[in-house]
Image (cartoon, rainbow, N blue to C red; front, side, top):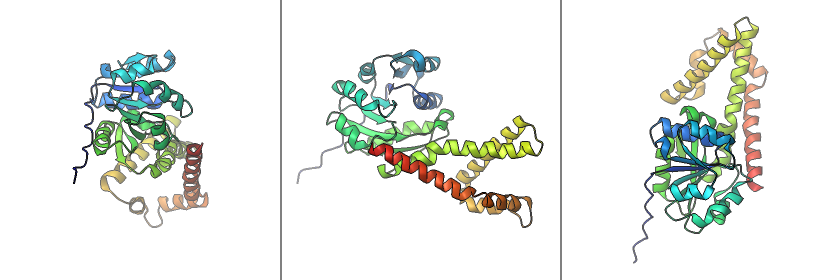
Length: 279
């Protein structure tokens, strides 16, 4: 019996490229640089105008207006364009794609099968869904790999992106859910933080102080959940003493439908993500 063909070795990460230089690309680049995963001068970003590239230059990165130049100089390339632009960009760079590249799409709604159709047969493609807190190295990131990307590529990418926060490999079916939970979830959490602070402002606390304390409360609670590995209900029970302030506040939240509204928000955002994927 013939031995199974070995997976191609992943390239050494010399330079990291970004095709598209928007906020998410900047967040990933900033996380990688801050964590020392790559030196700023070894990051090359492309965009059609200087409007976004100036932020990369401020980080000390190299920039260009040529997408092909990024592929010609980088082994790991993140495609961080808007989804409707991505097919044209992939057609443009396809002639310079080789089997040595690891190509990573950050575009929501563009499936691995579509990405593989638009690229040469030997291309190794993965999808990554990060969220904006990658900018402060506290992101929530998932990775899904295409048919020609093996475990070595996924592990290399995971090692890189752990510099930006928590990173897990998942089946592609989970990507749209992650988009809603963690991508849109940033806006949901900000809305709750704002409301929490405004409640304190209503009761007489100064605005700046209320918003700082609300944000710190969210941060501290999240750290406890992650570090202790507790179910949120257990931590809630630890705070909620019989007849105390918390149970009265929780009762008001339940009357306002907070739990059902939050679940509906994640469901609505997931449905929209799936709808965009079909388009």
